[in-house]
Length: 510
Image 1 (cartoon, rainbow, N blue to C red):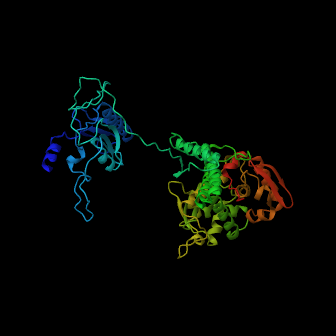
Image 2 (image 1 turned 90 degrees about the vertical axis):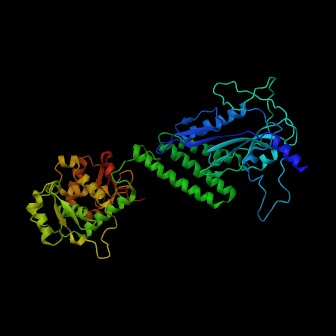
Image 3 (image 1 turned 30 degrees about the vertical axis):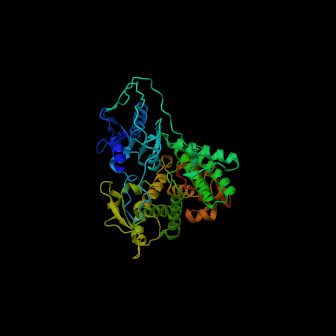
């Protein structure tokens, strides 16, 4: 009886099977090729994997529409290659009974997780259920492998370009439509920031806001050009929504995510203001500054303070020269200088000042002061400031690195060589005051912390001039379109830096 059953099985027709594959078309290219195991299907080439997957899915669907209905008399196609389901278990945990196919014959579709191949095959419903990831596309009209084989009705593909089968048989009678197996419908999962939004989250307004934000963030990622203002708005909405979500669920991770979103919103908003020159929340003009971050502003003030405490010579001219030389040599104690760097500072006698600095030992030159003044950019003079040379442990008077030094030096050079100051032939004291005021404003350009003004005692430490001379320097800066509404009293100087020079300011921390 066993032999008779085996003979009957051998006489049944092997179930159909075909595979659609997606492979790279070649190295160094994003193109892919689609191949089908059916002989009548030609190979296709597409420019990208995304387009290739869409075409491969469309191809397998066209096969399923054109294929004859599953034949009740066939035995499982997966058995032909000895699949795991049909192989006898020879391990420790052997099955108590051999595998037995059962149920109606179905047309099942299997794909790998990476989306590289799609396979359709005829097998019994039990094998389809035991195959991971298999989905049933059609079911035979009569029960499965034990029933006698009957001719199955088939549908033909009438559209142009429909896949053809080498074993395709067109019946003479009418073609009934195959019955589809029931499909389990799962509710779509709404997500934001890789988090699933629960369907039962309350209040409903919060769930709707999170769902909308997730859609908006995904839409933003598809934009060809960034919109920093829009992104800042989205981050602010996310911060508020995640804070409410954390309050509802008492989830500390959500609260941390809300803080991160708030920080991202502030950083994005500032970046947008610096790029576009727009306005801040209180309608003050945003500025694209030469020194862009607060760390650079603090380092600029640290150099001004160091020079005020360690200048080897008195007077505003010596202070300005020492400041510019310090910025040239701040990182290693050495740097390069040309004659034009000195003559452009508005000094009364630059040669005499340099000789005094070298005579005091603060500055070291390889040659004479005359050689320094005559040097040109193609042949600069190396200079050394011994007090700025790092110690044996690598530390020095400043904490910034070698990449920061040229930024600070460039900022100071931009201030002292301002076109209107040069045109007015401003004195060294005026240029030193311009540097000092640029490093002592609030974000809107008003002088002093909070825009309340700078005390005369603080100004005297940074700009060594008498009270009577200070008014003349302020008047020069006002005439050169540096200051407006300037008012000098016995205690302080108040005023506003003009819109023209706001990019050169280094705002004080609030």
